[in-house]
Length: 388
Ligand SMILES: Cc1cc2nc3c(=O)[nH]c(=O)nc-3n(C[C@H](O)[C@H](O)[C@H](O)COP(=O)(O)OP(=O)(O)OC[C@H]3O[C@@H](n4cnc5c(N)ncnc54)[C@H](O)[C@@H]3O)c2cc1C
Image 1: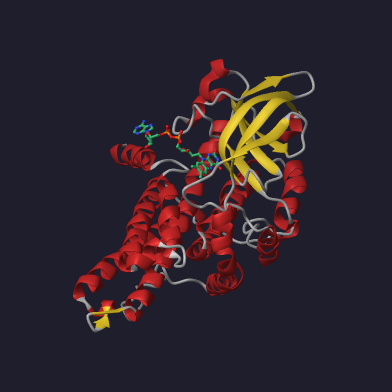
Image 2: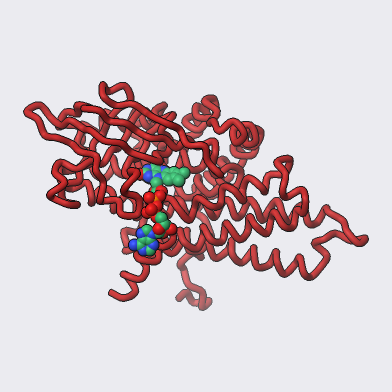
């Protein structure tokens, strides 16, 4: 306590000077460069290639990559701000950036050998997109039941199998692929490999036609006797389960940030609309019934922000954050669904058509409860922590 009786610790939502600057620059970028493309990318189910170039130029595709490798040298919290701000305008753009930073780069920074880092990080910082391939048709929540096989040979490994639901599948050139060196070993056989687009035996299959985040590509990956040399193992052989668990524990804070930004975007649109829209001779925001609904949505957004920021700050401080990460993702995704649903309701008929942005946010909200661990799996993680 200081002499005035105040604590010297900054409140959770008070940002440092560089965090404020980052938030401002990403917010301006999202309004100027992303907003005009949102509807077309959603309708076509395709990410604008020019926008990808602009995201690299802005530095948000390599938030935590050290400056020596061409990155922004930032913190995990910086990634969270970037994802939140992009998601206010388009959660599809946010998830591309999120997977690049919180899963792919995060895993390579933590588990990559110096040689692998020297090869991959400068590319990921300047022009190359990454993807993270764990899920398969038969293994989603039960991720370590994966069937993709990496057979050891004298020269390295030969990968065979299929991955499903892989974000950035269409745009990525560097893929982190989880495969087992021996199914008999259970989770202790799982190994992470770096596989590059163009490697013989590796191809990108069907792209999914989705309910929401339609501009983000979600693809099948096919491996048919795909040779990978031993220096492309990420981390140790048989320790891929640790690579997966540790990156996903952090990655889900990024999904919390995506859902937080979505909820904030929906709320902001709705506040503006309810002030403008007149019925019964007054703005609909003048009616207490509407005001109370907006108050609840504002509370949802505030609590989502507190839990996401707290989990991210715990992570950056090197403190345990497992339960907090699961809670923030679960809460923020439910808050996003509730807020986007209210946004549609309060826009009336306009909430149901594509000329207004909220019907898309409503569709986009649903994914937060599914990927990087469904809500039931988050509850399982929280319960384990609570019960000890
Ligand atoms: C758009 C999109 C993008 C994705 N991106 C990626 C990616 O980049 N990389 C990647 O590897 N994967 C990705 N995924 C896959 C995603 O992580 C999985 O879809 C998710 O983990 C759920 O797995 P599943 O679809 O097999 O559902 P299932 O595991 O079959 O779950 C179905 C239902 O059963 C419930 N359930 C399952 N087990 C239990 C249990 N033990 N107790 C209680 N309830 C249970 C679940 O909560 C869920 O409600 C993506 C998916 C989508 C849709």
